[in-house]
Image (cartoon, rainbow, N blue to C red; front, side, top):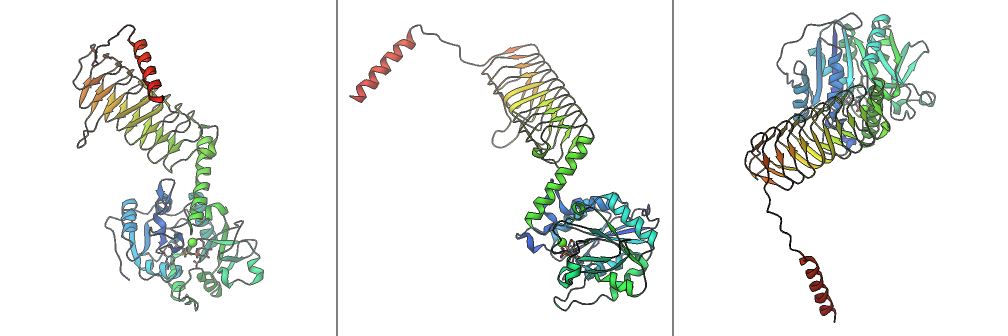
Length: 469
Ligand code: UD1
Ligand code: CA
């Protein structure tokens, strides 16, 4: 076994809900060939976060004394992601992968011989902390060698089945293809999560049989082995939605849909108003305050915070942005990374904001691009204003002072500073700084030639007739 260990001190063990030190092993060595592309399965994204980030976040929320992730050889990009998200954890390499039982055996030398070992799969991202705590409490109460999470999915095809009594006493886990007709008719399935007594773990793993058909060692066989030794095993039932694994692109999309539904419901319970929640796309980290209104078809990419009472109108697209209390955005607005919209500010339709801060009550109501700029409180940015922040080589900043009024169709050629309370005439192209309280205009003087319009029409009408004949 080649082991790549990440540096970092082990945190003190706060203990598991079962009262003993908790170790968590995350199995993610499978490449996920059924995803049918080059990307490792666990790096596929769910609500703006990799699958493995979801599971690592869940694992860390339980405060384990030890967190070990099992990866396959050559999965450098996954290693990078795991090191980033769980720098205090360890990574062990299973090369080559020979089944879930083998994967846990590869992790075993990194585990203490007391306490509880919780096994999670990298491809099961919807599990909740409450369910895992229930599983751990049950294992402790039963003094079970193994306690397994069961579920009853509407389509149990492919899942291992739990042979269990109604009171939860577990006799065996049988893989789908080894089930007889009676067990296949049962819908009580192995969700893949299990908790083991650490002091039983090594013996059980050492005795796992090698499967004749594929040479693998199945972790699920540990239950039958334990029962044969007279060590009790048990099962708890969880929601089938939480147990949904991702093996295909279709399942990824389905699991994504469940995740969205869950987060929307949580936000609505916290007082967020959504008229058509099914059309709103959230990221795992989307933060929305109570009383905020999210209209239909709004997309939240990662890193967005919406303060209480803000309104995000339909069809807006937000990423790494903050919208202040009582502010309004959209419809059809785009907030790009670094957009900070102040309290009660207004971003209207077809306005794009990037790396820019708008002060309290500032307004850009129509058709505007604000990039690399600072807009003071109460400033009004007219329709069609564009910050020309890029000269083809470098980005430059624009500053617009408080209460400034920028007329429509103004080009602000950065770097440029527009002072407080400045008035900019519509259609201006500003290339130089404007001091506070000034009026800035840069456009050709208007000419009016009386009667010239009529003369032009007559001439063009004659010309058209001549060409036709
Ligand atoms: C597994 C269970 C099955 C259960 C199902 C729930 C076994 C033998 N079967 O089947 O009872 O109903 O999960 O989703 O455990 N992995 C490794 N190394 C390996 C093999 C797998 O780390 O050598 C990891 C995978 O990356 C994955 C997890 O273990 O995260 C499960 O493997 P997978 O092949 O998806 O198992 P299933 O066939 O879904
Ligand atoms: Ca699976």
